[in-house]
Length: 350
Image (tube, rainbow, N blue to C red):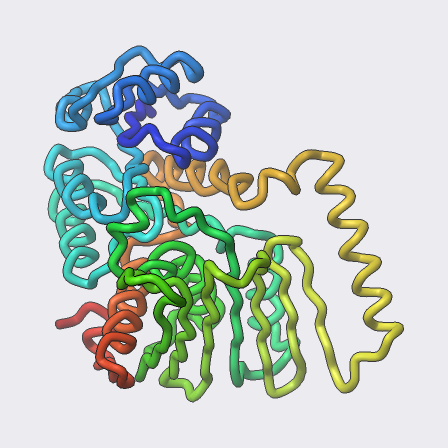
């Protein structure tokens, strides 16, 4: 598989390029960025033969089979569509799009031109998320009543793409939590989205904290608490079922399952397991790689999907639903009202 990279920023440097470099049979043949210095530095580090300052030249390279889009969010639609029209398979950073219109254009253009599309929603591949999904499907906690997720991260506001971001934290880390919530609930139809949030101080329109409530057709409820301001880092999901609770610490790959009362002995046992898992990850180095660890699994799956029609882990159709939540959460905040969603609209039938 011959690969081209568009964007020579941090995601390409620490995630995409190291992952592609580990996969047998992959040849990275070009990288494009308007910052030639950054592109040349990465080309030297990863032994990439061709450097472009105009990504159109990379797309036009007939030797490229797959293009990995590592650009700011607002450039995703245009570049993805141009890649599809050129017959290049597309790996695109999250969020695939921040509006439903853009998401639909990307998905449809890929289909019409016979190219494969995958989105980097890599947090879904954390073992703790997979195990949570498995326990829910096995009926360990009964039917889902509610899910509460937390994404608290510290963000630097000197990065230009952030100031150009329309929905701020909702389209920065929000797509990961949205994807996980939808995945755990089998992408069930959503009836309503309601969000509140904004900015503390200053005069920016940027949304730096938000609380999003999602009402599913199956009567379950999900809440997402997103913030760049908490002064702490937390990535977790709490799932309440009719027969128990799951507390999933995503970053630390730990799950605590609770039935009846949680006693101090239960807590001690849970903490002990968490410490052992963390120590093992620290010794192997995997713990410090965090979510970047799962890029290789995602990309290997995508290449197998292209070459052998293997089932795709993350689909464009699923990530279109993430765009629906992003767009309507933003709309809910701006209009100060809940937004009702039509079933056909949610499933892309209109």
